[in-house]
Length: 247
Length: 61
Image (cartoon, rainbow over all chains, first blue to last red; front, side, top):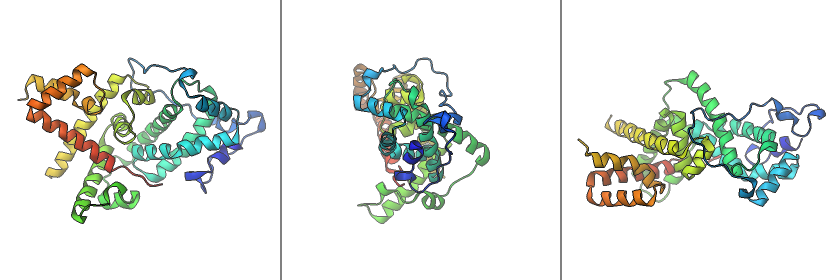
């Protein structure tokens, strides 16, 4: 039961684990065998980011991965503790919804523990987990778009759902703070209108601070693809913001 | 009408801002921005977009 307990720490404390333990013959990782595989990126990649070997992954990380694969409870808890905020915030930025992000985060760790035995250090563990988050977020995004196409989110709704913007609240005059909050809400709306792959590239670069190579590894595409997606995404965002200011 | 040289530079501005251009291309962009006010404005707006995105990130949870 180690993994189920492991995801009951930190952000997930108090949330009901959604997968039930299965018969012992499935082994320590048996719960996860019904989860879907992390999928390849949707866009055809002409050239993949260079693969790493176990030698490239830190020895501590490699040891942690092996312990998790063996079902070690403490190691699983440590992995969750280390990566849960990154997973949750990335999911939140990609989906634009806190509850969905929390829900997806649990699915991500279930998928991580189900497949970690096959992780061979082909990328940093963080990049590998990013990829799982992105693939699951992409699937949910498609589902959400089909059902909520055309929905508009007001600033009030946005703030009610997401809370305040902590980075905008200090050391500025109230009218400037309001202006920046309105701009932040416009940015969120503009991000939401971007194609998922462009939005992901922007979030990974501007908010998570990943390099092009790390983004390429997380998305399973060539570095050149990352560059062009970011260029297109930023141009689209700037145009949308200009239109919003003009209207 | 945007000059052809400016188009080429603007195509690289995003990667320039991210520090992801090779040295030669980076130097070319830097030199162009010193002499072209219109492209310098483009570069500044890109920087401001990045600042705004980081300011708008969510940190709760």
